Image (cartoon, rainbow, N blue to C red; front, side, top):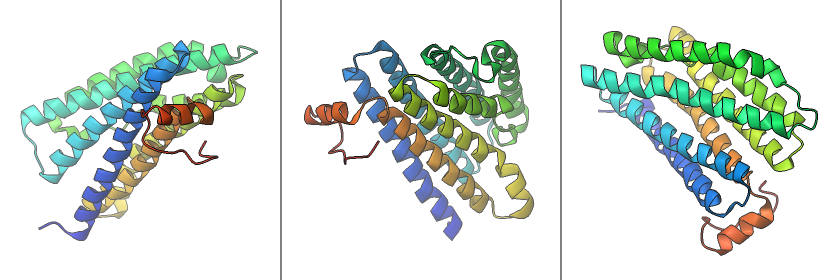
Length: 248
């Protein structure tokens, strides 16, 4: 029988998955009506990343809840986690380069153009290591997301301040927050296990941060369309409902 923390964890997981799914819905709905190629591409990124987060959070929750430690499950978990390392990096890298082009002074935030290759190599190495660890030791032993994620989040937030595009500026801010909170949620699991013995409580705390990350991803999707454009989208039946003034 599940204890209270296990029930809370599963309930929170359902909410997190729903928010990620809602983010994907909004992103793909916006992509259908946005005119600028740049915004359409960013909406696609958000939509596909939201789907990825739904997939990996569902897999991890089910595998951990049923304590599955079979080799095929570890291989699948390793592939999901290691691919996440790489896909997240390309999402960040692509967006930072777009942000730089939107800066009137074309500033190289965080010296990303010079360090991106180093971070890319580190990310690929981390992905390979994650897959190997997952196969031989189980996917639960895989190290959390690397510092590339943190540095990417900081660079995105800095780029948001420098962007000359008001819409992109808000999008970058929410995306940077999404990635930073996601990184934080991964990093705190180890320290929490040192002071908390209940695994479900630890995972619930981490999942709460993932929920905040999911909300930030949702806001990053909505930020790609101004209020007036969102109203036209909803009037056309593509959005989920009326938008309150000031929701941006």
